[in-house]
Image (tube, rainbow, N blue to C red; front, side, top):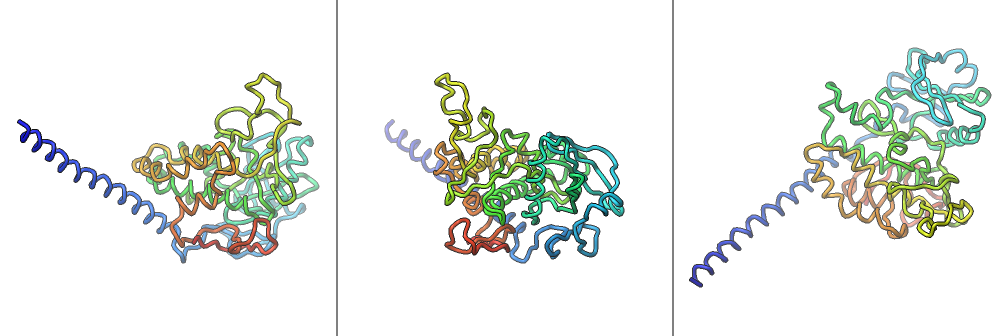
Amino acid sequence: MQSTMGRTNSSTISHSIPVVGVCLAALLLSNVLIYLYLDSVYQTDQQPVSSYVGCGPRHFKMTTMKNCTPWLQCSQINAEVHKLKLIGQGAVKKVYLAEWRSQKVALSKLASLDYLDDFLHGLSMLEALQSPLVVQLVGFCLEDHTLVTEHHPLGSLLNLDAVLAQEWHQQHNTWQIRLRLATDYVAILHYLHNSPAGRRVMCDSNSLEKTLSQFLLTSDFHLVVNDVDALPEVDPSRGLFVKCGHRELTGDFVAPEQLWPLRNQGKPFSDDLMHEYDERTDIWKIPDVTWFLMGRVPGGDLVHFHLFQIHEECKKEDPKLRPSSLDVLKLTFARQNGRLFFTNRKNNLPRGSADDTQKEWKLH
């Protein structure tokens, strides 16, 4: 009897070992596939998809244009840019589909003088942050409170699932494309946190829907940040921190430090008593945005498993314990020594150093 049980137990153990081995092999294979895909996306000789790469400052070049053109000025906008229809409206701007020399563009007009400061801030950010990760500025007119940007017909990132459900885009509804979008999202955060205009925080991101609306989906399924009206600067060396608005924020999407700390004590909200915070509020939101971007596609579960640990770190209650956006890129999205395109900081230089340079970043 005992010998029979012994043979049964040893048989069970011997069978379980190959099963464990198969599971580990499958896990390793899934990681290899993810890295091989990222390797193909970020080849060291790949250039970023951008219609205006190579243009000098204050110039633009859209996809079908052969040459770079200086930003349009008031006279050109008034004479050559023709409104077609309203395609979006927020508190700050009304956005129209328009046409310039047979090119589709987006014409934005100030919606209310009450938001003139926000409009001017957004314009200054567009001027300062021009890169392949930011919507392309075509021109502006301060007199008329208008600006013109490149038009992306697929619209905001809010439309992602609807776009991928269309018959002619269903072939793009894969974990590879969705992971690429998630990579773009984190790359944009890194660019904003290390930008030529200083360390910037995405304050207009108090819900998933509002965050997604800040980005546009390009025709080749990449992301560019579009709405830059609320990008306050953080600089600890100058004691400069931010509060995203003057109203109480609620919900699980915003970071814990953005919530009213005395709510459970029954004390009414007071903006004067709210603590300020930094760009690590953006890090808290990375897992939620990534979950949306990955959707429910075959292979997506393996990606979530692969990102589980870094996403847990993004959700640390103490913001000082969260990784930086570069940490997220290094550890989960980009292959080692891959090439991404955003602001480069020279090795070992502190944030905000005057020696920061704008060129390709090689991850090490």
